[in-house]
Length: 207
Image (cartoon, rainbow, N blue to C red; front, side, top):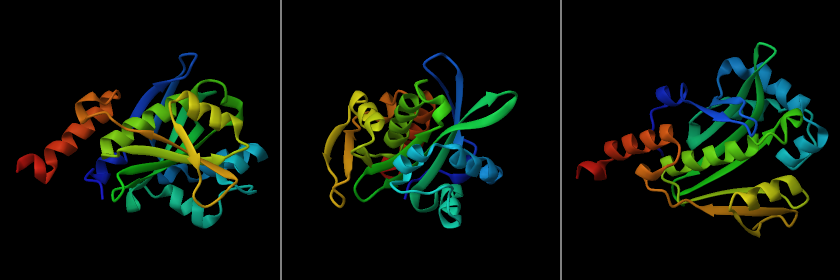
């Protein structure tokens, strides 16, 4: 288990920028986001939902919606990327990630609203996830995607991931990247501080 305090994580947020300089707020999901999150997935194109979940769904089933809304349970986290659109905070992307302490890996999946694809949101979000992975102590970050998902394959390749065959499904490909940043070298200032705080709180730091 990670040593981050959930009461802090639920209020944790990062400000990123799109390719065109628009402000992108990345924060942990909250119960108040339930309807907006469901609306977000319903608004995705059929292809985008298929690419995200490797199957045909029109919305998040009740059980999966519950999983998405839990933050920190079993070291699984959901973040939403929001922008102000016509005066309202609007979800334009989401990511869900899980930290596997036994293998020191972080697994993730993400999606971007079709109307906002091409703005560099996925690239910014993936870089932020790398910082979160490093802060948690992960040595590798990885994800799975359909071989036919050319956009995700291209994004992962440009982001420095290497590709291997998926161990269980020939329709999928796994992309993996080594995380080599020490806590003090994490490029995201907020997560660098979180990692240093975690390091200072660890039993080995005071031994």
